[in-house]
Length: 176
Length: 195
Image (cartoon, rainbow over all chains, first blue to last red):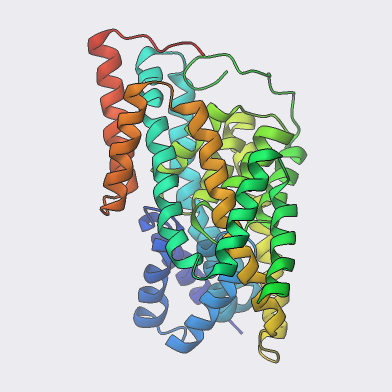
């Protein structure tokens, strides 16, 4: 049975991991490995790989899933709660603060200028990430044709992404 | 009101916490993968269905989500929830987006020790991965149309794309652009075109 002390350690460790995960969720994974496998020895490297594998296929962001599953592996349900709460708290604080300031300065020309300049950046970042992911995801003619089919269909008609994913999954079963 | 002072195309209704929670529960339940994988789902839910924000606001939301630590998906939830109902809204949205995976992982963990991953599941995901790429590309295309309004926007976008492909940290690019935008507005007394 897990001790309160370990639960606190879990929470504090993931609090720190959450604070330093700048640049998107995937950054979190090496951080988790360093703390959980190397530092605290709560999981073996093999078990850690299994955890990440599960985190990738379950719905939800990979980083959060990893935290949840690691927490569960170390300390059952309380561990999962401690890890998830810890990893999410820094985001909650920082984003709330940023949102507060954004709302406060609504309408000011500086804010308008800021977002006007930043919007193209965001779109470009998405495009960049897509290009990078496409290199590993579109590895053969089957993946490429699914991607092309989905893209072209979406140009013509707005379909719920959930439906698209379901159909694509079924196509995957058929093609692969 | 949107972040740069422009009126929204549609005003938000008076929302209860429940609606926020449910919408983000849906997002959390149908997002596969990390990074921008949740982008099309969130855009569909918040912009098209619920009409809580327009596309420009959504892009602003992403900008802030990128500027904080942690998963972009969670940060978008926090930002949206906060904007609508303060800290309580942020908490409801976060809980919503995190709960589905939480429950599924706990359910899976029980069975994981006994059973491996059947091949049909792997095939299912091999179909999903390219679809996710296409969904994100399509969403980026839609957002680009709303955002790339003039030559400066195109130049900024092109530059950012080059920088990110060269490995420059996204938050750094955003902050630089943000500072540039503020300085430009302040020292050139320049008005944002109303669109």
